[in-house]
Amino acid sequence: MQPTEQRYSRIEQLALTLVVTARRLRHYFQSHTIIVRTNHPLRQILTKPELAGRLTKWSIELSEFDIQFQPRSALKVQIPADFITELTPDEHNKTWELHVDGASSREGSGAGIILKEGDEVVAEQALQFHFSASNNQAEYEALIAGLKLALSHQVQSLTTYCDSLLVVQQIRGEFQVKDPLLEQYWLIVKDLISKFSSFTILHVHREQNVRADILSKLAATRADTQTSVLSQLTLTKPSIELLCIENINHLHDWRTTLLDYISTGTIPGSELNPQQFRHKASFYTKIAGELYRRGFSQPLLKCLSKDEAREVMDEVHEGVCRNHIRGRAFAAKISRTGYYWPTIKRDCIAKVKACDKCQKHEAISTKPAEVLHSMEHHFSSVEHPQTNGQAEAANRVVLQAIKRKLDNAKGEWAELIPEILWSYNTTVHNTMGETPFKLVYGSEALIPVEIGVPTLRAELYSEQHNISTRKVELDMAEEDREIAAIRQRAQKQLKERKHNKRVVPRTFSEGDLVLRRTEEARRPHSHGKLAANWEGPFRVSKVVGMGAYQLQTLQGNPIPRNWNISSLKMYTS
Image (cartoon, rainbow, N blue to C red; front, side, top):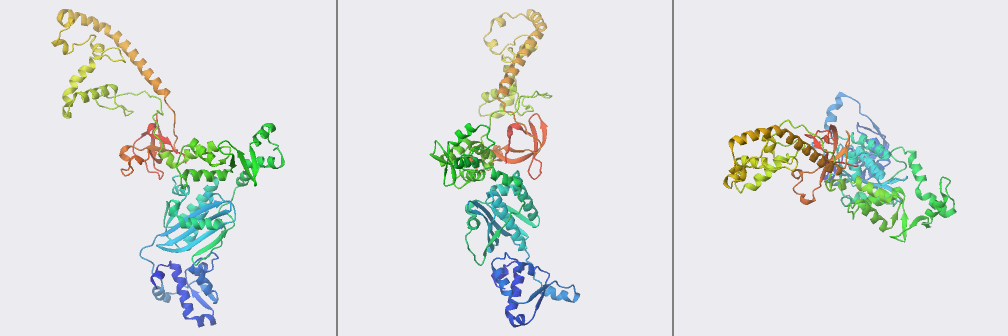
């Protein structure tokens, strides 16, 4: 075989063997009935109506002969001959590439499919739909047709490229399939994928999938083109059973009643306020069969159906000149372009809310998500953190004082602890109104400066009088402690009220998809300032309580430790 022929698939090599034999023994093939004994599906492959490329040419060439295909009988004497003539499979199974793209427009819908083995294009198909389909449905139809084409070539290892992020993420399991129609497509694709020994699907940008995009538009526009590799096929019905809801939505397009009123003056019987309907219809006009609304940003705004509105939003938000702007600015941009539908602002906000990139790059909120919870502290030390991850107020003051007293010799911090603690215990605290020393001993302590520059109590000091007076103060110290405790509780309640006023409550349930705040250590160094603020999505595996959750990946692998709700946000798909 020639080098190019050696790269044929196994079934193509078998078909080539039969063609070469027929050419060399043409007089025998023309004079007799030829029986071909094989265990390979040669007859099914050569008689398929949607053949393309070299297989089509070989099938036509062999059609002039009387060839019958029969399965081989299991004879022991045939084993050596089978061993010699059997094609030896490749030692390494090559990975095939499948490029798919779907297109939907007013002129029609179609799909483009390219199947490649290495660098060689094995088959190209421009699939034309004889039914209406949305962009997402066209993408799924293209993927299903491509997988069936790969299976007909007995492909075992397949890498698929698709420019629809929604379809790719739904197949990977990273996006939820909420549309009932797409869910039926998803189940068919999953069933086809299970027939491959190795399958990978990757998302590529449209400019990296140009050939498949051209084929899909070629099929959608019903252009007639045929080459040795390219074949144009038609799909008369979708791969799934359509639900009645599709026809209901089509019949109840919001533009229908307005077009009927403008054309015939008929007010729908379901309208409760005819005067209000007539006032509403006065803003609309009909031009060349299309509905337009008189606007302020533009003289005439073209009214779109739900499918057309979804296509416009996809292009403006994620198309070639995409910018991923926020909801209100997104709606204003579409309106200034000259489009309108009644729920434009609500739909644009929902589109941005469900956008994967917009969610991952959203600014981190500084508002707390949970009210303050009481804690039981069973252990206390100078730098032991509380259970909510924050240091105690006393420890924070001590740490700041150490920083101010130290110069370059940071290792001397342990020697400064007694001095700083003495200063802390002899300073009046706002939360208590007293010094900690007085609450314990009943009187204020002498500070070092009173030794060098004596105060009145230091000069008039009497040990006997001091002992008796301190005993009296110790008897009355309990009242001071109770007053300090009441004042401290009041300060805590004030802080709690201030905190709870800023709370924007949010909770998650088991199974919810969430994003996790990207800490500095987990950000890719190559991304720099362009790194996303959030990562994920992850699935909530357990609600621990009091704002703590356990997470797992979408594949079910648990993520270590609990995560506070302040580091999480809901993910919308």
